[in-house]
Image (cartoon, rainbow, N blue to C red; front, side):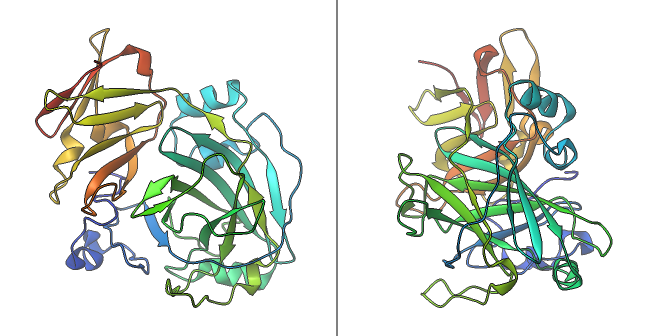
Length: 314
């Protein structure tokens, strides 16, 4: 599979951390994952307190190039036409972080950010191989931590002189017995990408002090619930799907396909950029979440074929 996460959070065996065809391997927290040629991923698991810094929001995408690292040109154009840009900026003396857009479906928030180093210290930090800043969610009204299970993706590792690092996050509302109250305002903060102790100890985050991006200006996308003959639910939105089954560890879910009413078909492997295992049942391997790199027309979807089952509307 080209330019994709070869496996999803919670599925990869330890040996895959040293494979991926010799590609760079990120430091990981509890959940392990494979890495593909151009996708670098890291899972966050902590809470770090900072103060707020921000700016105004705009409707148009302020950096199409950043968004285009995770979505194809048709999706970027459509998002821009719909006014899905955000433009909020959080900054301190080391970094400037722009929230390019925040998409939302029934299961997750998907922010895209652009991180720019403002001094040599920030430049050196981003250039550390395998070091990405960890995003964490907080309730803006109380400063309480939200969901720690934030998946974060970059197309490539940062190299000195790049000038910016684009990152896409996937923030599930429910995951691994940790839930977010969707009715409350959320924000995201960053810390240095070192190991984080999820048992209460936090790492130093001085380079990112003062940077917070509010996620309240999100853009809802269309979604629909589909069901197999067995009654298993698959939630399909314009930007991905969540299948509520016990997923396998062999990656066979990439072979699924979307079948449209007009006869067109899309393979999951062709339209997906990344994915996570959400842990939505009694077992941690229930809840397969796949994130598309394009926007699909859910109204035109006839069925989804996945893991030998066909999912349709009731």
